[in-house]
Length: 144
View 1 (cartoon, rainbow, N blue to C red):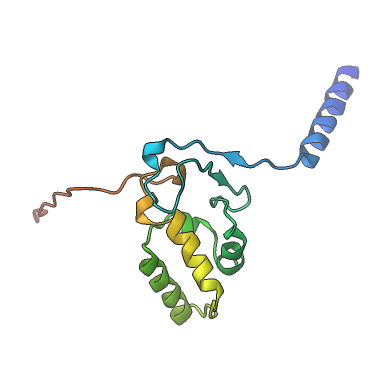
View 2: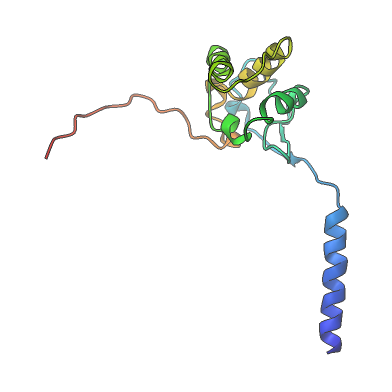
């Protein structure tokens, strides 16, 4: 019976410690060859925001404020659009899903999305995306 009490005490202390521990940013080391975006300095050390899974940046809070009110950040992470593509997607959300006018914050959001979630960044493994397909050979399916 005493051993069980010791396990309970140790477990309680461990849970309490973990509950009050401050979350740490996840450091990501990217090889220089993977950094293909002209806006991104090779010496940058990218970190991921623990709450959203998006890349930390000075504009992340604006993106969180504008985008996560309606949907999960996984929708951002799984897409790669050019700046014009992201703008078209915003217009589509405004037309079909009652997204408000972003006003002056639209430029900030587009800058962030273009910098980290564009086709240029798709080849980086840190963004959990495979490299874009090249030289696709299509073939016709035969009817049975």
